[in-house]
Length: 144
Image 1 (cartoon, one colour):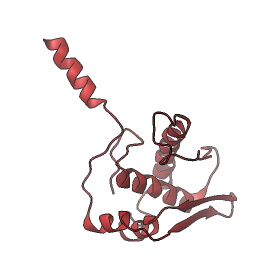
Image 2 (cartoon, rainbow, N blue to C red):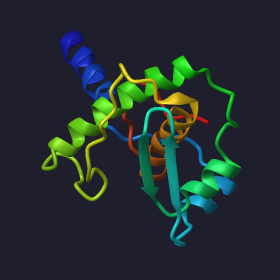
Image 3 (cartoon, helix red, strand yellow):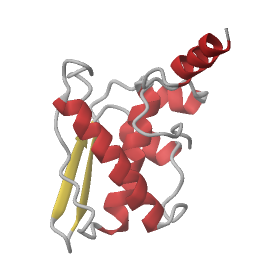
Image 4 (cartoon, rainbow, N blue to C red):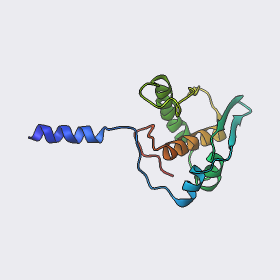
């Protein structure tokens, strides 16, 4: 009996990549935006560039996300490292994860200093993505 209960707890605590966090009305509006929205993330010093074409992301970034400077650069780099590893695993495992959500790998090298802006916007895209599509890319819930 005890073994079954312990196994049941293990199974329920390890299930899936879904996230159920409250979504504000402002966030819901950004998620429901269907207008084309492109955000370019670049750093001139590292010559690194990411282009995100995701309806609502720019609206969400401006209205919902924490402002630049809220997180330290090292916090953003550490989280981005974890998110990129999981993201790329999901791109590779397209039979297990929705290939419409995880289309392209992200080339993120922890040895490169991408600057604050690149890390800030990439981190916030991961948070936006997880909240909009009810996914979890790491061991912690994506909160704002």
